[in-house]
Image (cartoon, rainbow, N blue to C red; front, side, top):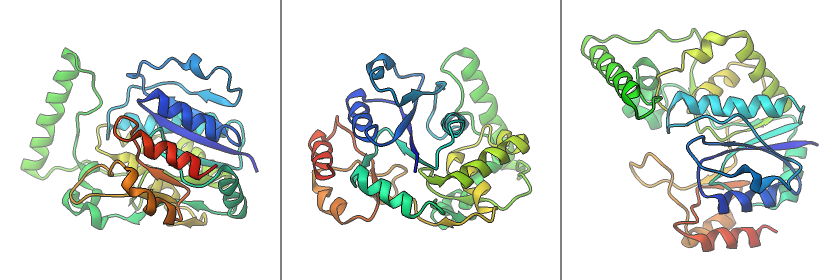
Length: 284
């Protein structure tokens, strides 16, 4: 069972190094490092199974995050793994490498993806998620004159849309939403890559959308006949009305120990380094 860990990272080299040091003992690692991050990739030159993919400048919630994810998917799929696990650079494994290997080996015939047919109940304030797709959002541009003007143009376009009830035409498919951290076996990844190749208009339709990284992948896979379990195997804590998961602290350790997930998110060494060190010791 050959497995690859795919990491979207954007800051905190100490944390990324610890994550790579642990996981690279048993898995090949593919990393997308945000182009805005001044990361010296030479720090990882001694890891023969750690690979960096083409870097994009990612804005949270933008279409570029989808492109960064696709870079990881295509690069790793070219090396023909049996299993692919997508995580953030702020995630930690809360099970040992051996446990993760045993789990994906025992479940190699299925993928684990959190999903729900849209309109998604938790996104009720966003039209169940359809507002993310129906309206134009200007979050993909640089902070220069051209970028500012483009953002203003799309903001004006969105106001016109809202005023006159104009919505973008969607791709003729059932839409699903869920969390973007997924665990895919080879048939699921192959289906995903092939779908994108055969339906380039589908991918393009997510330009100038909002947080569609939580929609595109689920939509492709859930319209297939692939065996998919509705669980992304992540421990995540949310605070009421928050758009981001809670940063986990030492006070969350008991909950982490009880979790059946294989990863947890999110952690930040600048907030609580002790919990990170404790989790690594706990999962040796």
